[in-house]
Image 1 (cartoon, rainbow, N blue to C red):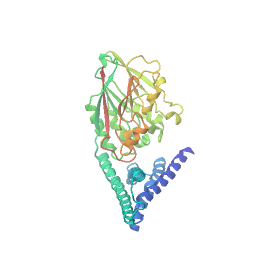
Image 2 (cartoon, rainbow, N blue to C red):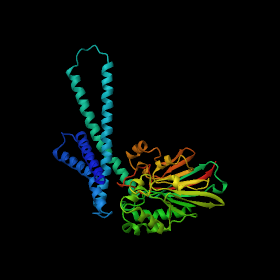
Image 3 (cartoon, rainbow, N blue to C red):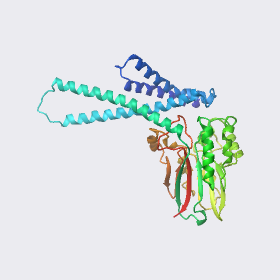
Image 4 (tube, rainbow, N blue to C red):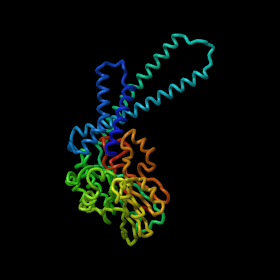
Length: 402
């Protein structure tokens, strides 16, 4: 029942917020046609969450359906207009507070306010309300349009980072790790050319190790295997490795996806590790199940301790889809954790909100004696929207000595 209760409650909340947006942004003085159009758009946008849930859960529509794509765009537009409405109200509250403070401290010999002054204040307030209302709507359209163009024209971008690791053996200095994550094949509508670009770009980087950190698919193995086939060409000098993300548990079984990635030539790390020998020096590559997978699959609890059981005290790389896995590693050695999941917020206002939700939200961050690197998503999730500062990322991490 909880599977349906959460989307139901979320839907009620979204319809309530749509009413809030309509009341705040749709002016009663506008023509009936304009008001009806805007209210209809708000209701449709709010309805996209329950409809997408139904369509995806029961596979009523193909992933490339124009209807599905339109609904995803509508949901993205909804999140932007909701944020702009809240921002507008915060701005108006601040203006009102400033005016109230000024009136308290304003010293005047007048004992009453002239009618003309009162009328002038009313006109200014009306202008401010109308200007901010139109500004919020225009800003919404501008942000949405820019993000849509960015997402649909973006090619995979190599983001390079040097990771300085204390006591790194000289033999491991310069080891190149390429990470891809959060591709979400099955819900993006230009997967084939994107996958071709990924394969070409990764192979040109000549990686020592390839790490795939989950959320690569949204669908069944039978539906998506043909699209994923080119990824079998990905080869790292010392291997290519895969761990599950939360989306591997949503449609097909994780066992099916793990088996398929093994067929593609990837080593699946299921709370396990391997010890590589690179130029005579050991390098531990470990991987865990998704941070929350234990709630869906009792045998797939995320456990860095189990993954690193009996591992040597050597430079250790942990593949963990969710960046918060770092908080589970205080009693084990992890020099570098590779994660995804956050998409860096993907598009505004998510790019701001993600910083409040995740301490490790994008790029390289220090944690204890090691590092956490968060890939911003090689694909995208939900709406085909992407802010200019969030790229379709292929991460290239080079290990360096102090």
